[in-house]
Amino acid sequence: VIHNHYLQCFCWLFAIYTYIRAFSMMSPLQKLDGYFILMDLLEYPHLRESAVMWLVRDFPKAIRKPSLFSQNWPKVIYWLTCIAFIILTSLITLFVQSFIFKLLGFKPANHIISLLIPIMVAVFSSLGIVADIRKSED
Image (cartoon, rainbow, N blue to C red; front, top):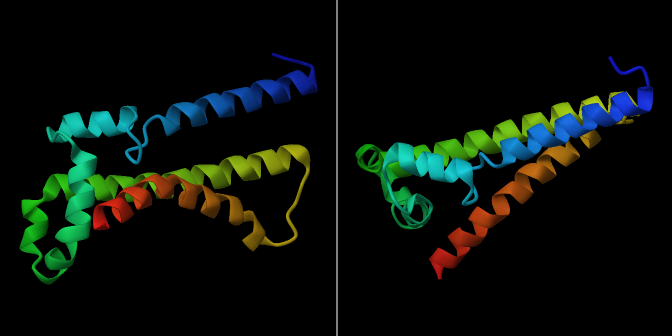
């Protein structure tokens, strides 16, 4: 038990930072541990590049012909995992933000403003994949 409030606060923030850093390594959006685990589970080398090419070239066709989704299930799983990761990252950001606001005694004037940081995290998390999509369209 730590009786010093400042040291206790520091330990909580350090633990939160460590957990967030470990969670970010599980991202399928970047070539980090999470991507390589997903690539190994699906037994599909170069999954990200293939998924980006599929999204750009074949996804519009798959919307019209749903059987193409089952033929490309590793790529569909990749995109669903990316979407789930972005949503989960935004929710964790919202939770951590509210925890830190509560810890600091800060109460936002408007609840919409408190959604700004989680939305920015989702957008910045997606920028790498958006760049890959734009590059493959050229």
